[in-house]
Amino acid sequence: MRKIKKIVDLSHDLTANTPVYPGDPVPSFSVATTINNEGYNLFTVVLGSQSGSHVDAPYHFNNQGATVEKMDLKYFLGNGLIIDVAHKKRKEQITLEEIRKHEKAIESADIVLFKTNWYKKAGTDEFYDHPFLSKTGGEYLLL
Image 1 (cartoon, rainbow, N blue to C red):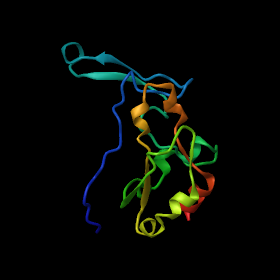
Image 2: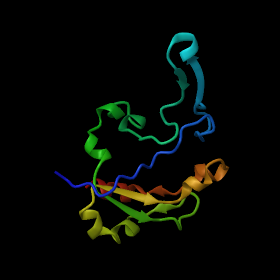
Image 3: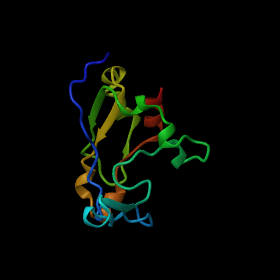
């Protein structure tokens, strides 16, 4: 059994102010029942599947791809490696060459995270112009 050193929760609060991709449903929350009226508290929650902290399951890009509930949990827990790419600018690629600089550390990692600090731009137009992983970089990490 693997010894867990530290669990890091990367999720953000999901609120009516959570940024969404332009055109996606805006999260909304309303009271459905209350303890005083029905004997229990319940909220109605409306949001798109890509709202807030989420996983882009293969189905998001391919009709034959797996949906989140069909993905193996091993993809969501493991020894992580953080690669700092906070220097990246708008719409700038995270390249294979940059990733290969961490080749040894990647070999012992189950999960690779790219630290962009782009969350700090939430609420601005620039938020949607985040750095992105190059195709060759993604293919390399899948091997």
